[in-house]
Image (cartoon, rainbow, N blue to C red; front, top):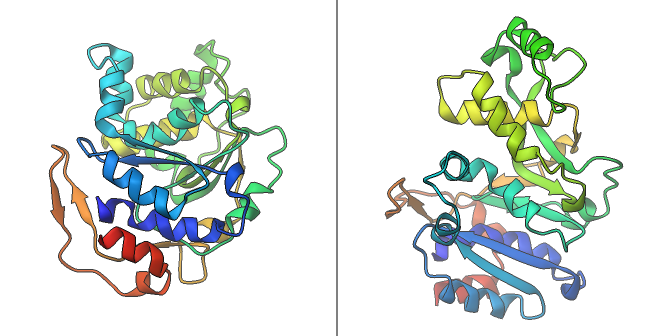
Length: 268
């Protein structure tokens, strides 16, 4: 568990200068993980902040996976978690999701002050693959003509439109459309992509088409100058059956960003 939370502390170190009473943290830990130990360790680092630790097992227990809806949510919980958690945080003005294995160099405060306008979501784009790589525009045009759904765009879809990158996701929960998850599920049923992960990512991008604010590209993993870097330190990798194994090799970049206090606590 030490390594599962490791990258998060690099993120939190940028917030120590902020007002801790106005910041809440939500950790999602592996299936079957013990949430008591990581909670107490994190509370030492973040004594004045609201802190919640939830295991994947707790989430699965709350979902009725025997139903089509529950099974869909669990099958793609990794991709949908940022939106599902945001929908459960209606008391919070903003929710910021940072993906696993991340080192955050940039100022989180900049995202906190960003004006989203009428948008509920802000994220970077992943242009390594585009709509046209997955689905024919003729198919999307046919869906537009036939589907009487308010989440289907009235304007033609752009074949060069990028997917949504969830490495950094900023959400204003109260603005989220109530049928967002329903629309994502619907899109998975009307477009066919062989790879399940590409399938759900395309469905999310279609559901959010023209409905999210593009974050500055500096918030996309690219190189050492980006605001978010790959965490390259020691960690445990969880397989689909919940078992963990130690990653044998790692780099040295993480050492530059790890706070000594965090290292001491996480090693204890």
